[in-house]
Length: 147
Ligand code: FES
Image (cartoon, rainbow, N blue to C red):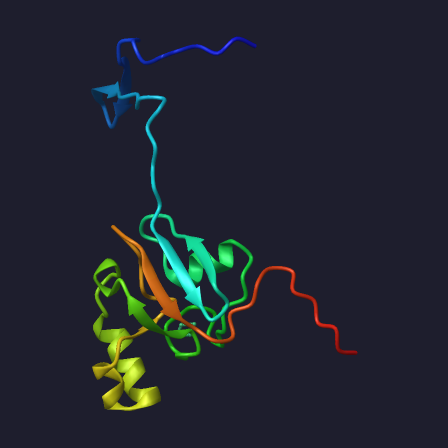
């Protein structure tokens, strides 16, 4: 099937009826050669890099790609099992919220807030790369050899 270059086509216009109002919407086509770079999170000591879609958490992105990330609450921000040390790129993470701080203090003491520790299930990545340390992260399909 031949490919069609739509870059020179005029924007399509659609009528959309919403609660007795007719809205005219313009469909905007993005250039076909547009590259979207996702931020990456490097995880040590496993030495892997995970691409993280905008607005996704570190743990969510790792799990979506098949990695095991320690958790006992399933990512609800209650257990701190997912906590990781941010080595660099803290500025590319969503700010620590009050709930995250409260759980960290309850589980690990007030001094924890002086350290670059984040709950991987709460920290969303945006705008740049991050490096974290998290022992216990395992690659997809790692089979146990013990029996
Ligand atoms: S997975 Fe439990 S706090 Fe993050």
